[in-house]
Image (cartoon, rainbow, N blue to C red; front, side):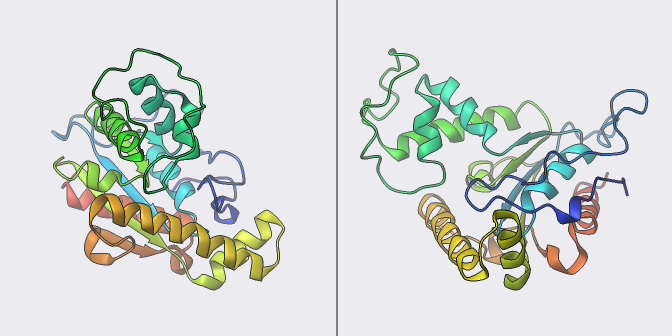
Amino acid sequence: MSDRNNVNNVTQHPSLGEGLGGPVTSSREGLGGPVTSPLEGLGVPSVVICIGRQIGSGGHDIGRMLALDFQAQFYDREILNLAAKESGFSKEIFERNDERKGFLRSFLHLPYSNNTVGDSFYQNNFSQEGLFKFQSDAIRKEASQGSCVFMGRCADYVLRDFPNVVSVFITASMDARISSVATKLGVQPDEARKIIEQGERRRAEYYNYYTGKKWGSSECYDLCINSSVLGLEMTEQFIVDFVRKRFNI
């Protein structure tokens, strides 16, 4: 197990799903060149890990550690940049509608980054279904090019026909999540609980709307794991072992 800088104390940002303690580092970095992929030369061209997570569970940081261990590209909000480039639409449109279901109603005033988008965007109607399609196309494109770790955004559903995908849902006890969010954001426990409940309601609505499945339900994922039982590093290592056994690598 690699020695990472106090990663067990890092939690998710409740609105963006990003770690609040800076980048996760590994003792393997800076020790004589790039880390060798565990898949190299083993007949498995790439592995794609799709992670769903509860707010405050540490899923974002676990995802970053997995990307290190599998020499994979890591995509959380980064996928919004790719979707914007693919579509020619402003990045702001994707950011303001990130993981929100329903039709886009209030962004007709936003600028284009390219005025020649074409008819593929639902006859140029501004809709979140159209944004979801562009985002899904970007996810599929990146997954087809090599090992990736995707955070949320229905990536497990978008890549359901890819044979090299593992879907994981990371949870934690409510007390642990409230404590993490309250500490990192400097709010009271009651406010932290509201942030969690509101954020997870939005995530569930988005996931359920586009996939026809139930966000967080064990039957929708290959593996569900409680990070508050083992801690972030040991949870990540458990997932690594699971992925290696899944693909016999």
